[in-house]
Image (cartoon, rainbow, N blue to C red; front, side, top):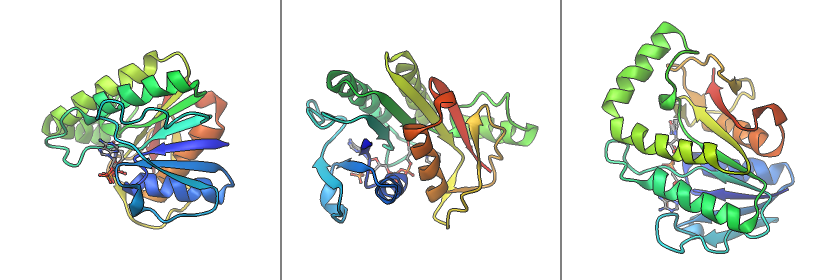
Length: 210
Ligand SMILES: NC(=O)c1ccc[n+]([C@@H]2O[C@H](COP(=O)([O-])OP(=O)(O)OC[C@H]3O[C@@H](n4cnc5c(N)ncnc54)[C@H](OP(=O)(O)O)[C@@H]3O)[C@@H](O)[C@H]2O)c1
């Protein structure tokens, strides 16, 4: 498939690019500084900034699926990267007639109903600390849910740079353990499943964790 990864230089984005190439897809990696990525067969590197006006124009032409792995530098002062950035990705997806959009969000957006008491408590406390980040991401999630195309929102728990096990829990309303970190590799695998398969996830919010 022709897959674009926005935020391709990030901790998750890099892994999504790597796994997508390993699975044989044609990948376009979009980043503010694409020179940070190594070139590879079936990989196109493209400069793009999701918050500068026109910063993505034409970048998604010919893509079947777009995966957003963008995220703010600081969660305590996230600005409007997610709301403004996802709006510009969605506008470009529409213009380019992209079939499916995958938004990497976070478990902090859950209202906690599907989680254990402890996980719900942790999500509520972190929501009070990172209110601005949650609010900005909530706007981005709502815009995604309204778009007239296939979409999946993926909400990972906290992540670490550790080897992926390929064994993780993922699905709509999945009861994930918020205090058990996920590997970036397993999150990347889940994002690619959302992008290339999993018809039952379309139009849903998917939790991913242990
Ligand atoms: N890390 C975790 O534990 C965790 C857990 C749950 C949810 N999440 C969420 O998952 C998403 C990805 O997380 P991550 O840890 O992989 O993030 P990350 O390593 O901080 O990467 C963020 C990516 O967004 C890009 N970006 C920022 N501003 C941009 C702009 N204006 N235009 C284009 N690209 C821009 C960055 O590019 P540059 O290289 O140019 O800065 C980088 O590639 C975030 O939304 C995060 O909140 C993360």
